[in-house]
Amino acid sequence: MFALVLASCGYHLVGHGGDAGVIPADVKTVSLQAANETAATLMPELKRYFSTKGDKGYELVDADKPHDAEVHADVRLEQASRQFVPSAYDRSGVATQYRMTISGNIRVYRAGKLLWESGAISESGDVYVTGGPVGVEASRSRIQRDLQKQWAARAWNRLSSGF
Image (cartoon, rainbow, N blue to C red; front, side, top):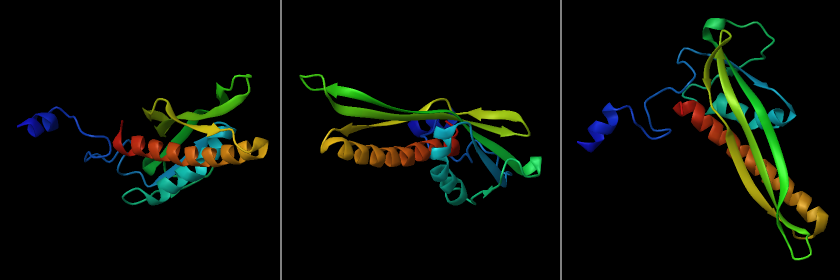
């Protein structure tokens, strides 16, 4: 009885619904556009999801190339930012931990009309100071790659679930 009530009210778990997501089912081509440099660093991982993860995968095309507006969607990554700030200090005031946060939002357009907006999508992680500046930079690069992958996975989940 409880499951019937939940199903009838439209509730479902993210990623477990029968919906095709926010991109209409008849869309065959997608152009991914980055609004700034940070957004561009998130694109390779997001492109991988679009080309391989969907039920059929999408053909990725350049936004500048001619395409059939009836079977095309524009996915724009906007307001992307990356912050790397100290989050903990030792007794002498030297940073011992840093927090990296990557965030951005996605908008889906079809024929110039906004279909959906994700809202802010954020991922964050900590870098602990060990081994001097070289160690911090290596940890920073590693956490940045990991956060980019996590961000793309979260963005894809939102796109494919409609939440």
